[in-house]
Amino acid sequence: LEIDSQSLNSSQLKVQSAASLKAFMLKNSTKSNLNLYDHLTQLLIKVMDEQLQNVVDVIEDISHDVKRGLVEDKQSTLRDLPQTTAAELLAEQQRLLFSRPEDADQEDELVETPLPNVSEIGFYLEQAGVGLGREEMQRIFLALKQLVESQALLRCRLWGKILGTESSYIVAEAEYREGEEEEEQITDEAAEEEERETEAQDSEENEMDPLPQSTYKPAPVVPKEAIGTGANKCVYYVCKEPGLPWVKLPPVSPVQITVARHIRKFFTGRLDTPVNSYPPFPGNEANYLRAQIARISAGTQVSPQGFFQAGEEEGDEEDEAPRDSYEVNPDFEGIPVAEMAESLSTWVHHVQHILQQGRCTWVNLAVKPGEDSNEEGEAEEKEEEPDEPEPEVGPPLLTPLSQDAEMFNTPPWSSKMSSTLTSQHAAAVLRSNLWPGAYAYACGKKFENIYVGWGLKYAGEGYSPPVPPPPQKEYPSGPEITEALDPSLEEEQALKEALEEQQAAQEEMEDTDEEEEDDD
Image 1 (cartoon, helix red, strand yellow):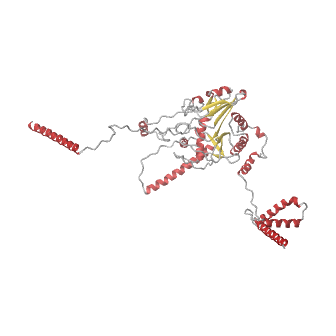
Image 2 (cartoon, helix red, strand yellow; image 1 turned 90 degrees about the horizontal axis):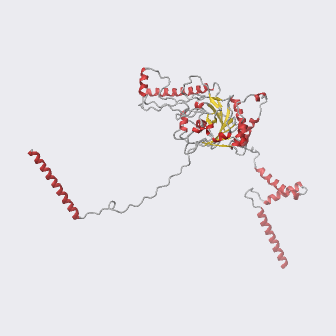
């Protein structure tokens, strides 16, 4: 009987343990909402149905297939297409740069190209420790080639790269084509006509209901320089990445250059972004970018002395207007690299200086264009002669860098050799301290300028607030600052009597004076 009772207890324990194990295996997973019991059941059914050889070796794969089959049943039959990344889209657009048209002949390659040798420029910049890298320079060269072919440019070069918070700008500098000046003038005239129409409409409305007129006269607007001269001598195209479309920047106006000198703004990488600043900037980021390019070019575009010479201009030789044209000197033989690295007088500016007026050539705003020279006008001119501003004159073209002024006790330029170990193959490197990111190199008869930076001028060291003054000392005790005690009743009575006596004596003096006057 005891043996039978023990066997019954053991069988009951086994049944309880089996039930608890089954309950444990029936618990669903929190991730896949499946349980082990159903999974093992389906796994065994699949093994019995297929009866594969060496099942023990592939049991893991069969288990994975069972799980995947359950998940696929719950998924939709529509498959999501893989998302294309921005890098893949850019690579698809840049792939067109490496494709060559079938109609292109090898004879066209022998013709003089409007593009410089960007690979050679990249090599020298790499020796100088600056540049954009070989791969990016090659892609930019192909993008410039695409720009020249699409716009039929006569001359084009890589100006540099301006960095931005969201994306950067690759800047190409080109010469204006024939007929492009007329297009710009037509657009300017159309804008002026629209302004005149709006003014006429406003005047008509004012005639119907006249309003009090203000006597304030705003300052005259400085006229924009003509296309192909001064700050608008060249045209600039920008793109965000090689392979993306090039965008032509608008001409710059003197007001935009003047305001750009008073603000400091990082570029975002979107040309249509408004520029929120004080003083308010007249334009969007495309206009601000064009103004900064003009300022950087005027201050950092340099060349070896003697490479360019003043061009021959038509007209009187005694004309006082500054010359803005130059030509390549065919007799230039080059300057030794060591001499260029030591002396700044061997480098010259070949871009005109921008005056405080925002133009390269000063214009007298007191004289209105198209004014009749009558007697009244002559009389007014004679009256206004003392108030006429003095004409502003900047440094002439091809001025040596040794005459550049310092700012914030910082020299404007730093020069060095690319290598002191192999000086016979080195190049002279010039770095601008006023426009960080502007570099120039010269080696023999070859030179180039490039700018890679944020487009901001050096503004001195960072602002450090002054130390607060020491606390003031405590006032010393003395009769001057010690509070007086209140007088007693006797002192007040004595003071009152003294004042009464003084007043009585004064009245007696006045009476005696009146009697003497009567006697007289």
